[in-house]
Image (tube, rainbow, N blue to C red):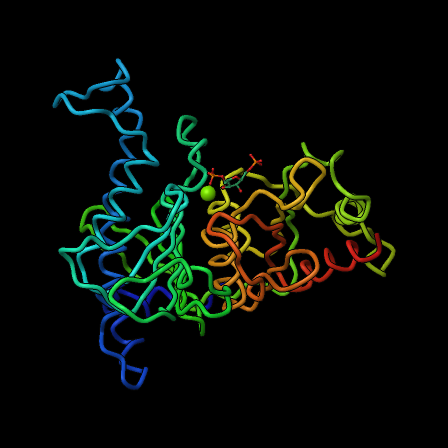
Length: 343
Ligand code: AHM
Ligand code: MG
């Protein structure tokens, strides 16, 4: 349910959009615009490699060298390197953290540092690459809280609520970059002929309630009873009040957070990766997955919960911390919390 029209959004590039948003903020230096440009560049490079991943596999058949005699990198490692290389020299960042790196990623000594902190999952859902299913890049930006030339882990371990921006890129049937600075959410589609992201989804608003649930039901025997009751409730057709029966929720599960969240954002409904007996903390990472998606979802009018509280209020204690996630339409997330409470 995005509310822009093709006419009003025609020809607005990502760069122009961010610049205009920045101009509206008193005292903004334009720093942010530069950082976003570098992230968008990385997205284009990753997109290009993702699109030819099958061919790269054929060329790298030995598993060791490509035609240029270089090591064939795994795509998630490639995406990680591209993102780091694209942003490290710009002078906007004081530190980074990536799902692919155990510790913080420092800005090399030869480059200037800046006031922002960037955290990312360079290629989320990467187990789906080999089967041509949508994957994505997720990013989260904070303002630094420490002083000194370099940032530290403390700059990364901030609550999601203090993000200044977040976004993702979905490498789907088209390539779309979605971002928010907290007030509103906008999507930009890559025109591959021009190599530019153009505004295509202006002011995305998630419906208050949806008709789709998205969860890995293979884990259902490991779930608490309240969670199973919630899913059963969504599967149960309710009377319409006029003698007819309503339709139950549909189930959709891609297994790539970016794809499942993108659908949820545009169509409404709920995505969940709950805690279960096998993974009592859930599976998804707070800093690179749950928090940025929660920031986007709230900015679009939706909600994101751990099942007992707001994702954006969780105080991180470690870089790769996991968290249960219920995200999507506000009424659907509230229903999940209610069923979990009734345990
Ligand atoms: P990854 O970061 O290793 O790619 O794992 C995260 C992915 C998410 O994209 C997705 O929501 C989830 O794992 C799917 O997990 P499962 O296969 O257990 O359903
Ligand atoms: Mg991931």
